[in-house]
Length: 75
Image (cartoon, rainbow, N blue to C red):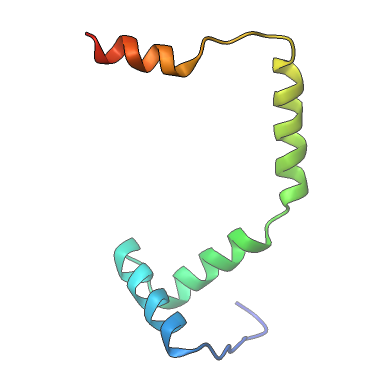
């Protein structure tokens, strides 16, 4: 990685980052990179795709999911 960046974080944030990295089997640096990448990604592209899917479903009627859950429980 170029442009080495050093960040200062409070003890609680550092602790939570270490715990999360350990849980995910990653180094603290890898976990921080993953979190920053997710936070900074191009959400406009995501929402444009979501809108396209939503527009494709317009006018369709779907069964209430509560009914499906109830049916499944009764089996």
